[in-house]
Length: 302
Image 1 (cartoon, rainbow, N blue to C red):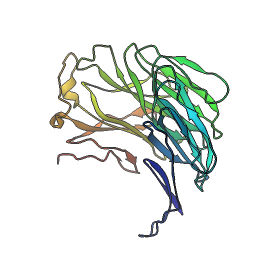
Image 2 (cartoon, rainbow, N blue to C red):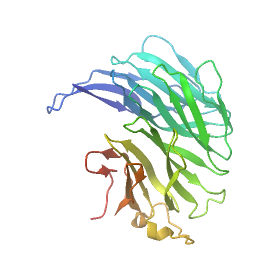
Image 3 (cartoon, rainbow, N blue to C red):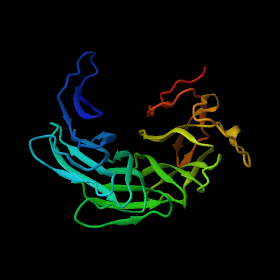
Image 4 (cartoon, rainbow, N blue to C red):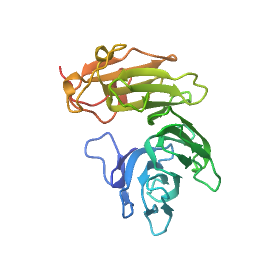
C-alpha cells in the first residue's frame, strides 16, 4: 500500500493501490489564518508521516485537531514547516522568520527523515525555529538560503549565499548518497536588464564551486530538481542558448513563448550533461525522473 498526499488549501491523505479505483480518502486537514497562507511543498517520510512547507502571515493555528499550536509571523511573511503523522495529527510545527519577509520554494527529505528547505529572504532572518538563534543577513536585495531540520524539527544547519541583487533558491533534492543539491536563480546586478539572469546548481555539503547551468534574459519557469536512484535531473524553461550568446542581449516579452525552450540536464558521475531541449509553448509545473528520462510536463512543439 502506498500513500498519495495532495496539498492545496488542505492536506489530504489517500491510501493508494495500483489497482484502478482502489484509492479512497483517509483524512483531510486544513489550517490557515485571516491572511494569505500558501503551501509550497509536501513530502512523505518512511513512516508515512507528511511534511509540508509554506508561507503565512499574521497568527495561524497549525494544529488541525482539537489542540492549539499558534505561530505568529513577525515580519509580514514567514515560513512554516509542519509534520503530520499517518493519521493526520500534528507532530510539530516550526517557523522561520525575519525582519523583511522570508519565503520558501521547495523541500526534500533524506533517508533519516531530515527536512531540507530552500527559498529566499531579505535583511536578517532567524533560521533556528527553536529557542536558540541562528541569524543570517542578506548581502543583496534578497539572498538564497538552505536549512536542514532533523526529524524532530530542530535546526541542524542553515546557510545563505547571494550577490548584491536578487538570489532565490528554488529547488532542492537529496541524492542517493545523501548529498543535498540545490538549484537557484540569480540576477547578476540590480539593473535587471536582459541577459542578467543565471541558473546555478551546487551540492550543499562539500560541493565545491557552483555550476552555471544557463544564462538567459529570464527563466520563465523552474527550476525543478529531482533525485532518482542513481542520478539527479534539473529542468527549466528559458530562452534557447542561441538567443543568449556571449555579448548578445535579447529582449523577450513574458508572454512570447515562441522563443522558449524546455531544458533538462542530468547529473551523472559528478558531472552535469549538456541540456536536452524542446520548444516550449507553455510552462509546466513539476519534473519527474524514471530510469530513462527527466520530464517537465509542458506543452511542447513537435
